[in-house]
Length: 260
Image (spheres, rainbow, N blue to C red):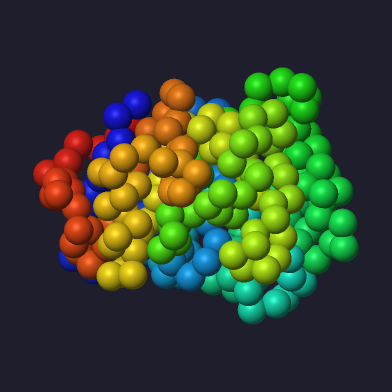
């Protein structure tokens, strides 16, 4: 599907639109199938969207008991560590809405053996989506992603091994840039989603955003270029600061047609 790039005045406007898109996608999926499966983004960018989703004005529009929450990636830390993606989502959203604990599926980044943790998360996906690990990848209703100033997304960093993975759904990825390993969903899973929604904010992302969206194709250097859903929507929400180096101006969200 063609990508849609929406431009916003500031980070708050990006967060508000992302939260409303979450609600719209959740309501549509639950109406159609009785369940909404979402993979949450990590890092600092989605924090405000999660806070907005927890506010009654939006939270009351969603049947949280019909939602299954997963994660796009996780750092090699305990779940209560300040750097934990799970902790961010739990503190800002998951602890504030009525979602059953059994429907929150976190990656166990604290495990000594991250390869085993990745394999077990793959098994969790297979069970939750009623698949076998030999089948086609699970199809999320929504995958939320951010992008680093180096063009990485999830824990798919430039020139790392996970960029080449086309069979496994979840892998432990060596990230020498950060001197660590992380767990991440792989490209086949991200590209199987019904919708992938990037949120990108700030001047420090401007160069990478321009390279990813308008530069030569070089996914080893800019892994976010690999995200192209095969049969789904690709939505970029960018603020004015992040979009400053784009040659083509993003669409005005008030004039854009909603994605189906």
